[in-house]
Length: 127
Image 1 (cartoon, rainbow, N blue to C red):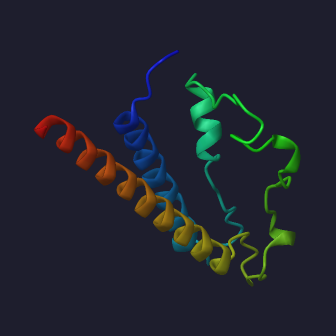
Image 2 (image 1 turned 180 degrees about the vertical axis):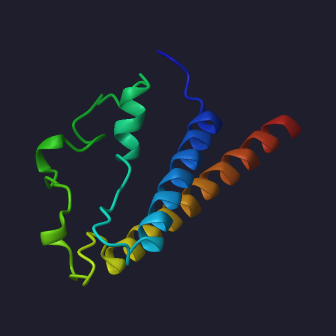
């Protein structure tokens, strides 16, 4: 069994969230650019799977939900976007704002976990 390196994992997710936020900002900035194609980054779980990080192990049926119940996703095309811009861009500003909210929420959760772990480490060192 390998150790869990929480600070390294949190740092990797923070870098991922920074890249995703920059991509969202680029999409919003180019929303009126003719024929601009919106971009997004792959989910963080896929990034971690590519780096060879250890996945979650299910030791009991109640620990981790199975993949069977997941809702399948697909990439959003210009035809599926919520609004049609006159430029023909595939950027939906509403969808980009929702993505930015997800990034903000994930960053807040990441920081909360790191702060809690830091407090636990400091309490362990003091005693």
